[in-house]
Image (cartoon, rainbow, N blue to C red):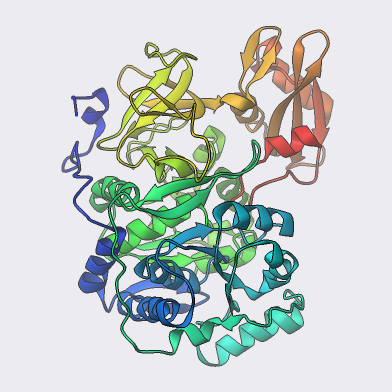
Length: 547
C-alpha cells in the first residue's frame, strides 16, 4: 500500500499494514483467546461473570448440540434474537463452530419485520429470548425455521439469581407474553451434553455473518461478511487499541451485540483479553449509572444520544472516571457540543470512529488522546478512502463528495441481491455518506447523501443544523429534515426536545438566525417529548419524514 498522509498520525508502534490472511478463520482468534486468557473474565452481565475458559466450554457444548440434536447443517442460517446477555457470545461462537451463518436480529422487531428478515435470509433456526417468542409464533409458519431455541434472560446467572430474574421478568414485570411453540428447545438443554463437536471446515471467503442494515432508507439488506472481513478488521482495530489500553482492561458495552459496532467491540476485546460488561437495557439510565459505579472501567462504547443522556443525568457525577482511557463513539455523528460536555465530565473527548455494517465495521478512528472533535479520524491500516463525485472520480482535499472505501474489511455484497451500483470500478464501496478530506489525511462526515436537504439550489446537511441547534443551552436533542416547499424546493424542519421547558420557538428561531446563514435556518420548528430512534439510539430521520 502506498504511503498515505494519515500515517503521520499513527502512534509509535502502530503498523501501516496488517496481514489480512494471517488467520484462516475467526475461530482461530477465539482459540487463541481461549488458550491465552482461560481463567480471566471474558463477559459480565447483571453481576455474573464468565471466564474465557467457560465461554470456550459452553460454546463447544452448544455447537455439539446443534450438530447432533438438530437438522441444521454447515451453511444454514441461524438467527440470534436477543438483547445483551451472557447467552449471546456462547450462541454466536457455538454457531460458527458448527459451521452456521449467523443472522443478527433486533429483538424489538415487529412480526412483519421478523418475517421479512427470516424469509430473506432463509433462516432455518433461531435462538430467541422468551420475551419476544410470541412474535415468532405469529410468523414462523411463513418461514423455513425448523429449529427454535428459547432462552430466558436469567438463564446463565446461576443459582437463586437465575430464578429471581426470570420470575421478575415473567411474573412481576409481565414482559413475557404467552406463546405456543410446541417444538421449542429450552436453551439450558443445549448446554447439557459433553460430546465433542467437530469444527466445521471453512474458507476465508466463506460468509459467516449476515448483518442486516437498519432499513432506514428502505427494506433492509443482509451484508455478507466473511471470515477474512472480520479477522482483518479485528487485526486493524487491535493494532491501535493494544497501544492505548492496559492488559486486562474492562470495557462497558451498552450497545446491543446484534449491532455491528458492539459486536466488533466485543470481539476485539476478546482478542485482547479484556472483560466486556454487557448492559442489557442502556435506556435505563439510572440502572446504567449504577453499573458504571460498580467497578473501575477503561473503555466505554456508545452513540451520541447515549453520551448526551448520561452527561445530562443528575447522578453522573457519582461515577469514577479516573480509570477511563477512551470513550468510543460510533453509529451516528458525535456532536462537538456533546464531546465537549463529555470532556468536561471525564477529561476525555469522545473518540469518534466511522464505519458501516458493510465494512465489518471500522474504516477510520480518531487516535485516542489526539482526538479532533467533529472528525471521524484517519483510516486504519490497509484501508483506502476516496472522496468521489457522482461519477466515481476523486475530488480534491476540502471538497465534499461521497466517501468510498476499499480494503480487506469491505463486504462482498448483499445476500441474494443485485449488487449493481454498490461498488465503483476498482472495488470502491460507495458508502452513501458525504465527507471531506483535509490535506493532512483527517476525514470529516458532512451527512448522509440521502438526508441532504436542497434549499434553493444549496445543499443543507442536517448534521450541521442539528449540531448548531444542540449548542443552545435549553436544547436536549434535535433532528432536522427537509420538507417540500413551493418556493425553495425544500425547507428545513426542526424537531426539538427541550432541556428547559421555558424554551420557545421564537427564541430558537433567533438563535438560528444568529448562528446560520439564511438558507440553512429552519423554516418550521416542532417541539416533541421524544424522537424516533433505532434501538442503538440513532435518530431516525426517515420516520420523521414519513410521519
